[in-house]
Each structure stands twice: as C-alpha cells, then as structure tokens.
Image 1 (cartoon, rainbow, N blue to C red):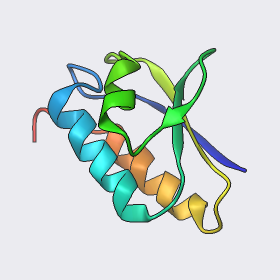
Image 2 (tube, rainbow, N blue to C red):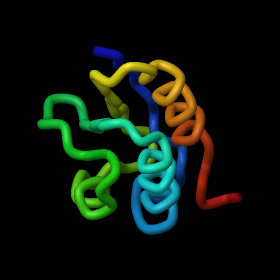
Image 3 (cartoon, rainbow, N blue to C red):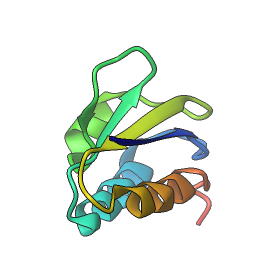
Image 4 (cartoon, helix red, strand yellow):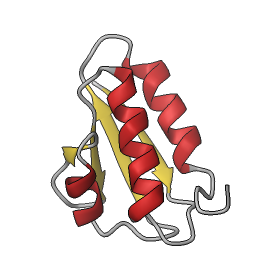
Length: 89
C-alpha cells in the first residue's frame, strides 16, 4: 500500500473550493484513494461530501493511501496540491 502524509496548506482547510479541486484531482487519477485525519477512519478521497465531512483545517496532517498500481506518482501529485493554499490561487 502506498501512503503519504501532508499538512493542509489552504487557509480554510479542505472546505468548498479546496475540497472540490482536491476531489476532482483524485477522480482524474482513476485510482481508489483514501484520505484520513490522524486517528480517524479513512474516507473515499474522490467524494467531496466525505472529504468535507472530515472537517480538515489549516495545518492539520492528513494521510493519503491507495493499494492500486501506479499510486505513488498520483499520491505525490495530490500531496503537492494539498501543500498549496488553494484559496489564494
């Protein structure tokens, strides 16, 4: 299983626009990817409702994971996305 951790850079966390951009990027990979807060159950990273329900705020550490082949490159690109302030762009 490929996993990556990332600190949420968006000032409002994973809400509205940042969550939408993230879930669209996950969907574009075509892979089954999960996202989780530390100590919580992972959710489908392609589901905007599930991602927003996490309540991930600015500065929180999240874990991305996938068992699919080719997941390493996809997770790296998603980490790069979440490492930017998506509200400022």
